[in-house]
Structure formats: C-alpha cells, structure tokens
Length: 530
Image (tube, rainbow, N blue to C red; front, side, top):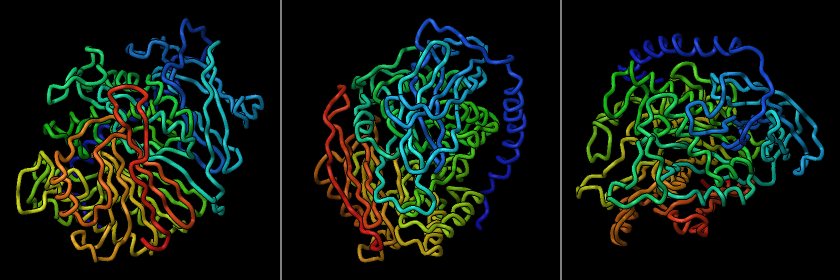
C-alpha cells in the first residue's frame, strides 16, 4: 500500500490531539448533560426542520429530527434542558397500525437532534414513522429496510443528488425526487455552502433567493448550525427526506471550498483548520440521518461505509476529503502538474483503501457501486469558457486527476476482485455527465472497465460551454464522454439484475419555484458488458 504524503504524519498528530480535546470532551459530556429529559410545552412547532430516515439495514434504519421552534436562532429557540422525544413506527401510511414505540433524548450538546436507530424489523419493506415531543407531532415519513442478505430484488430505484446552494435557486428537483417514491437517495455532498451572504453572483446577476444578511462565512459551530437550519427549512427538501431513506455523505462546501485533509485553499495553519473542520462535521452529523458510528471525534468522522441490497447491488459510500493528499500544484485547472501523478498521493487514505479492497473481494452482487464525491474518470476541460487555449489536456486537480496513482490503485482493486459491473456515482461539478471508464481514457477502442454517472446540481450554478462549437470540443477531447448537460437536476437510477438505467432529470429553471422536471437523456448498461 502506498504511503501517505509527507504532511499526513503531522496531520495525524494534530488530529489525535484534537480528538482528545474535542471528541472525548463531547462524548464524555453527553451522558451527564443537564439531568433527565423532560416533557415540554412548545409555543410553536418544534419540527420546523422536518424529519428524515437514513442508513438502512435489513432490520431497520435511522430516524432523525431536530427540535427547533426558532430554527435560525443560535439554539434553535430551545432551552438547555434535555427533551424526551417519542418515535412511533407503523406498517401503514396512515399510522393506524403502530408496531413500535421508542423514546430518545434530544440534548443541547447535539443541537437537540435525535438519531433513533431502529432494529428488529422485517427486510425489504416500507415502514412509516413520526415523532412526538410534548404536545407537538411531526409529519409522517416513509422509511424502507434493505433486502435480506441472500435475496435478489427484482428492481432498485434511487436518486443521486447534491450541490444545493440555497440562494442559487429553488429546490424543484427535490420535490420531483419526493414524487418518485424511491428506495433511497444517495446525497453526495455540498448539502450546504459555507459562503457569506451575497445578493448577486460573481457576474452581478441577482440570485433567485437571498439569504438573510446576518449570515457570515461559516467558521463556528453556530454558523454551520444556522446554515443547515436555513437549508432544511425548505419544504421541497423536507418532502424528499420524508419520502425515503438517505445515504448521506459530505464534500467540500460542507466545510470549506476544496479542502483536503488538514488544509484549505487559504493555507490556514492545520491546527486552526482542524478546529473549523470539527465544527463543520459536528453540524453535519447533527443534521443528517446517520448512525452513532458517524458521531465525530473532534475533526474525525468515519463517513465511509457500505450497504448491500441483497445480491443485486453493493454500495460503498466513500470519503474523498478527510484522508486525501493536499491539493497539488496550487489546486484548480492545470495543463501540466507532475505532482498530481506522484505515486504516494491518495484520495482515500491507506485505511479506507484497505477497507474498499476487502469489500470488493467479498462482494457477490451483480452491480458494485462506488458512491463518492468527485469525478473519477480523467477529463479534459478544454472547450470550457474559463479554460485558456492550450495544446495539452486541462485537468481539474480537485478530482481524482489530482491523485492519478490513487485512481490506478482503485482500478487495480476492481480487476483483482473480478468485479464485472462497476458503477461510479459522482457529483460536485454542477454538470451531468455519463462516461465510460477505460484503461486508456483517450482511446475509444481501449477496453471499458466500468461506467461513471455524474449528477448535476440541485440548484448550485455553473458555467457551461458557451457555444455548440465548445461543446463539440468537449466530446472531441473526451471520447469516453457519452452525455453532457449543464442544466440543474438529478439522476434517477433503475437497477435490475439485467441492466442499469440512468435517467438524467433536468429542471427548466431554478429561478422560480415549481418549474417542470423532465428527462433529458436515458442511458442503459447491460450487466456483464461494462
């Protein structure tokens, strides 16, 4: 296994110190916090941030909510007292047949969020749930357990989505996802954006929605909590969360743009940056339907994990931020960067690479899915408006092209494990793409080793090719590119033992709420044919 870059040893030492200072402090304080839980009477609805399910298992799932009657206030309008929350699970949508009732405690230390881990249910079926706190009752949500380990489901339907800058536009795509009634959603990250209040984009065009002016750049735990509260107040996003379980991940803007391990683009000293990372990842945990295993220890979160949908699909959710090498050549788009090809560079880190290699060897699923954040396939960006004319390929160093040796190692893992149908799911770029994964990405006759489906953004803006000529240049310079769109939306996937279907769903406009959502392109991959 290739070693970490030279900086990672120092990062480990600092991280260990922070784990002791922050992680142990938080974990130790929780059991003794502020006495026993109490029933309260709320003056207004405490479920303003909605409800959610996530991280399903064959016998259960996580159920999430956060009590916040005044969501944009520093403490969500809550007192420091712990609050008892009741969770009801039913096997019918009307909640007429409640089969399980559990209680949980919402505490100030974790923003009065609840992560109820439900077990002992039947595999491969829908359940419904709601929360009660005091006299308040939440809406009803739908959750779903994974199939039994040896079962082969006839069909799996899910969405891959993310990049949802609030001021960038309305969340119409989330409403469409809710209407799809899917088995789950893979959220690849950029759930929030850390930027300060801005009424206009970089070109001076007014944003469709405007944040309150008292929203600064996110640095503190309060900053990140308020940002999540703003985003989670959106009714379309709440509808999507209530419709099915989420497999939640994070990317750069959930902390700060293009961060890598213990560094950010402004070259903040690692000791300081890791404190910011700790605040951001705690807020991520507080607002995502994830398990206690994802509770941060200081700046560290074990975010990579796996989900087996019987023998049909095995999904490995990866983390391409916490363990990666620092950005090469100053980050950005570069035509030449020898540093990016250094053998010691990593995207996953040694431990995660070992975990993935072992999981691939054990997988017996028809489809092996790598669900992650940044583009895996090499991609030549010549032809885009912001890329200067050059004769050499221009690569985005924030993607796997910034650590090509790491990509080669994962490709070798797939070959060694004899994975017949690898599928990589990606986001981050605010564009939709479908790409063949080939041994030689510049040779259309090179053997295909898999496919990558890259989902566009829910609402985050992005500059696309200005002309048909520039779009043609993208296809010419990337013969492995099979589809490209710079519109907003998501990707809906339908998986069977025989084929994988990807529907690239696009929104007419995110400038107004409720615009039509249509399928721009449908692509299919037959099992056993790459």
